[in-house]
Length: 600
Image (tube, rainbow, N blue to C red; front, side, top):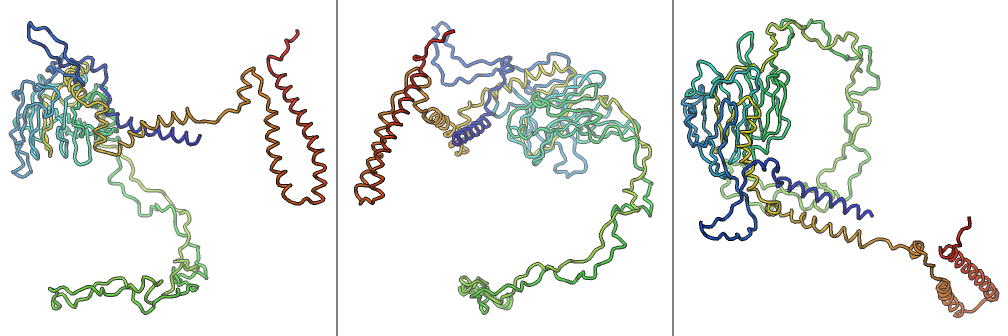
């Protein structure tokens, strides 16, 4: 049973491993794909010809037909780049301040093109083409967005086609100001919200930053949302198109979504750093700690006296007086000697390099001996060592606690209960520096209606998701590909197939045999007479004993026993026959056929 239990546990563990490996190969949600226009490739004959049924294909790959998304409701900005031009966008011609002239220009290139490995022919997007360059491009909204009673929904798609080493793919919603000039769009251009992915090294970020205006001073301060709890690594490394969405509600709540799944949420009042509203009280910067303030919770006992027998000079280690030098110790042999095979280099200059000495090697004479050189007793802990004496610590009777400055009213205190009412914005822009190229952007959309945004996402990102899912290999192909990269997976595959067969054999073809008596208990058939078999076995056991006794000489005591033996055997046979007859009667009596009908 223990072996069977272990086999079951091993089978479950291997099945779980295979399930984890096959997780990425699961099909996309049927409900979402049903809404998409998915068509199978078919062969159509010429007009007038009789159509023939095409031969069945081994594996028909569905084809997703691309159709440019169209906004279906009120919106402030919608861009799918399917026109193939940047007519509604403005490239920055500015330079960054306080930076070398060689890299100060925003001269990074942008192109409108399809993805390199596009699964949707005809679907175009905005592609960042240059590495290690400053890029800046922006476009005006249909009308400025004003924060009042309706939510803000911002969404767009990003695909890191070649991965991402260090760089961002975030957008900026540029504040509506008289000074706004898209030709001079730089990093210092005022923005209301910055949102999107950013990565450098192993730090994977998803920014949500808004600039809050101090109602007392009129200055702006950046407020950063907390870091998402979920792992974002996959979105940067899988080379798939992902949909990034920001939802801001008039009740100050916010949600950050990737592929329509919430990865971060909170409230503008409670979940931003630094906090929107400053504390009502602050520590008095002019308050100073009194000179006689005692913060020590413990002090040395002033009444303690060092014991007279306390020896502070005793060493911590002493020689072991009981140690004895091992036999065969070579006192006259050094532990290391000069290498006899070493030769002085030909270019050795004693005037410059000094006298040449052969490198030291272990003395071969010490290999068979317990040791070489001068023998010294080993050091052990000194049992009389006590160290430096210190008075014991006691509670400080004058302890006053840790001093803190007193609290005073914050002169800069204000309370803004509606941080959602931010500065209105009138343009969207990308101002990026990246060490990776070919970052694909598509389907920018800004609205105040979440349903409209979801319909736009279904028509745009939904098609990409369906196309990428249709192009993914099946489960068997993924398993074979994974095994080619990691050959040890073949062992798991074989065991996963073989173990069930072994377990079936173990459970079905092995086990304890049931006694014959148990079978007769289940039926009315009388049990066979075993008396004759018992007598034959007893006779076989007696024959070897008689042969042994006949081989040797019999003693008087043995002779007497032999005389009594026949009488005992006759008595035993009579008792055995009676017991057998009684057992037979009991069996027949218990049989249902021998039962008499019960009289009421």
